[in-house]
Image (cartoon, rainbow, N blue to C red):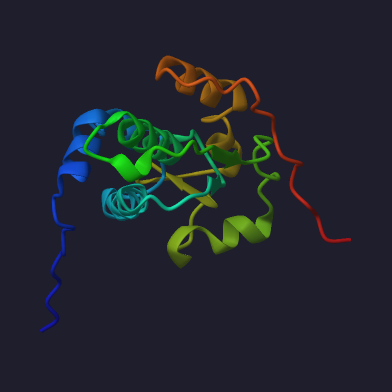
Length: 169
């Protein structure tokens, strides 16, 4: 029998301060496609980087609604402001890379492949249900992501979409 255990990083004063500064994650779960386990893993990596004082910007590619990046930005802000995190006083940018142009139209091949290899009319998955890529694309926009960051106290005024999907000739 395979046993699975979760190893939690030691709760240092710096990580405790970041956790207090970030607060609840409930709002983030509705705006990310990451499972709680994957989001927790990313969060633990960010807090370790912040606590160690490592320099550099962060980037998320394929943003959807920006939930993962919002949590990263909250963690960076909390660490920067916390006296318990003296090594985290470096300015950093959280980059969000996405075309925000949605997905190409579903093709018969997409529908045949479906999600999880099961016959379906959908090529994408959102919130535990199968949907078409058009329906998926209707759930996010660059303006929506900008507004979410503004509401959280960030200034995403330099946000601009990256070039749309590259297509093979």
